[in-house]
Image (cartoon, rainbow, N blue to C red):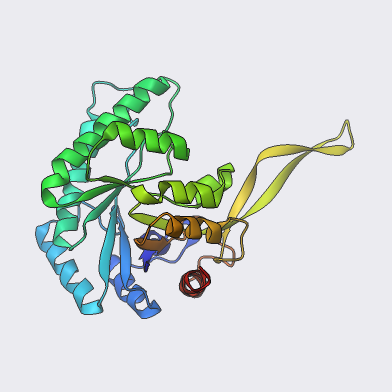
Length: 298
């Protein structure tokens, strides 16, 4: 499996240190990563800042660094704007994904990431589902001629459970639509890591790892001189192997299910040890060690 470093980790969010896109790519190569995943928004691969010439120049830089672009990571929410039906929010997002596909093609990348949709009180679940299916179908149809696969990452509310995600994939019914199935979501929600990963492995082209500790929450009730449990737990990102997620079992399930794709690492929330560059680099190197050890033990 090829390790990938996600540029969101060095984008300056959540208190993290910020590197511009070219510097990040050089930095990833220096850390030992053969491939990167590029965040498709500012301050990295924004469609407002990168046209054909800029993408070609970035591709040259990647080749000079010996780094492959494995994923162009889009940011979509196809239920967005449901309260304003007169504004073509879905069309805007589909056009965004099409533009990302053209950028990906110039970068030598064949995979563009999308999310599904958040649930909204004004949009019934069945209508939200149909809206999401139609949008992703159109993304697939508009990019298939470019040799691009649309990868659905299991983060947003619609089809976040593995059973629902397979149902969504069946409804979309496009050969260039696959899954970018991650461990943290099913692990935090209580799905069995190994069995779930093995079941979805045949449909998965890419996965992203992070590790988290669960921090139970309680609210003090003075009338009882005691505490009431609060749900859900607070979670915090930690170096790979130091958390509570069943990442090793998930990876083994993917492998036993036939997956042999790219495996990314991301630091996309407040991180134990802080956001300074030294701590980010420590965690990025730790992931390479963890992945190598996990594959050796399998």
